[in-house]
Image (cartoon, rainbow, N blue to C red):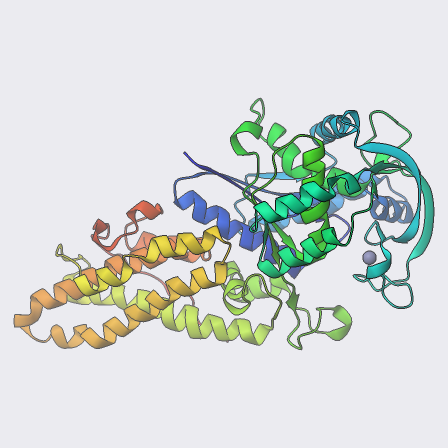
Length: 501
Ligand SMILES: [Zn+2]
């Protein structure tokens, strides 16, 4: 059985869960669910990043231990997962003892392999990023390119990672594997950074205690990024009690990340893995940012924030999941707004899918007492659906989640047109056309089932309700064919996407 391992970044505990976290989690969940439908052995990882100076500072300000603050904040992210209907197989916390032990093991190997040295580092540091900035990325006025706050000059004795010695290896990696980083524009950005000449990077902090202790120098803790990146690897060793999943799932197939953490994942991470003699992930997919309705970065002060919880409370989590992948092309930046959610909800979910479902079920009830006629489906429609599953799968293999959804949605629209063209209400008036009506009803029932199975990763609750009404709860893609003959009898269905005022 093929395996599929997909990850979100781990979320920094100091932040409150917001749309950005919801977005990355949802897209990763869509991929995980689709691969499960293929019958693959899937592992979907998410979690929290808990070490580093920002957490230590915030805890100090609140007069608590860092671990206490981390526990409290990690809970908010753990609670987020069921609200999004995320089907993650594990939730890693970097304060887990098993994670820390594994980090020490891997980085001790990096040290033994000769990729570290002790040196003095001086540079411009952003306390919010917990990261030093290099000259060419610093904004005017000596500010952080991400946080736009003023940087501080820091000097300290650190352990360094010899990133510079991986210059050739990384260039070769990018030449050999043009889909290591996706989409292309992000690949180019990462490669340009590599080609600009890699410098060694600090891998430990000497003045901090909230972190993973450096095993060969206990006065230091690892720099938060080293410990955080390794979560993708360490989680597999202890996610299941007494069962190390590393062999089964490593290397990861996809790391899904936002573009703000590109460099860590596309440059430092593969170099670290090479330094530890570990296999590299297949793909790092870098998505864009969700923006406010005005096309600017969401911020409370601009009043352009789309709150995921508001969307969930008004229209349900399926509406949020659908909207985010339908309205914003996955990979690119895109504007978002509550009005646009409402438009997609009413115009597509309610009027197209909801309507197709309710009229299909109603007609089978009215004309055939709820029993689907056991005849062959319309060969013209069968042909139009033939390539659907492989087409959707091929798109999802490239994380083209928006085109994949469009591919399915075209069939939803096609089926609504089919209803109009065939006009079953006319056929029902003419006894001589009973066989035609049987065929139309059968075609609609089966095709509706197929699109619903395919839509399940985006709309898990609605799809499950609809499949239950069709009496066919099977989610496997192998059975997502019109001639599978799964729908025999339909049951009443409450509106899938009720109109709200
Ligand atoms: Zn910053």
